[in-house]
Length: 210
Image (cartoon, rainbow, N blue to C red; front, top):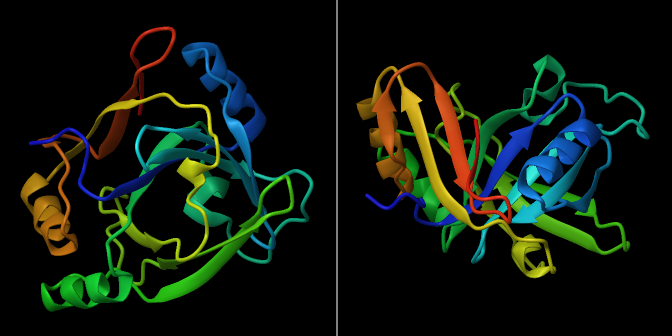
């Protein structure tokens, strides 16, 4: 099995302290993540690192310059006490068709909704993604994303740490594999406690995150 999942769009490393996690990533890898943008109304902002090809890493955490949102922040950020690789996203050729196909195979990835953020230079990025209407609680099953006419984040001159491997452990790997098949992707899985980890190539050598 390929250690890089088909159609991988990005990985999500969520943290309760964005500045500290960005600094730690830079210390461990020798590569400083680039500011991504602000998610207005959601109380978060992010930093980005390219993973090679058309994939990237999103480091997301609370935005201290925004008022607290009316609801919970994305990706369970409010409940974290340390950084965690929380989930991942794939970009199918046709988002709506992929959702319909997954539902036909017994997995509902949720409704499609519109999202946006502004880069530090003011550029507006807009995309569509599945909202996890019937998510797998472990985060091992990816959400789906479509960037439409927006320039993909990986093509915006990001610093790069090439992805060497993405893998996971799960109490029931076969169930996760079934859902991944419904989405047209795959992920190296072994049995164990729920966990998602990745390794990147860096100026300091291979570095693993979980």
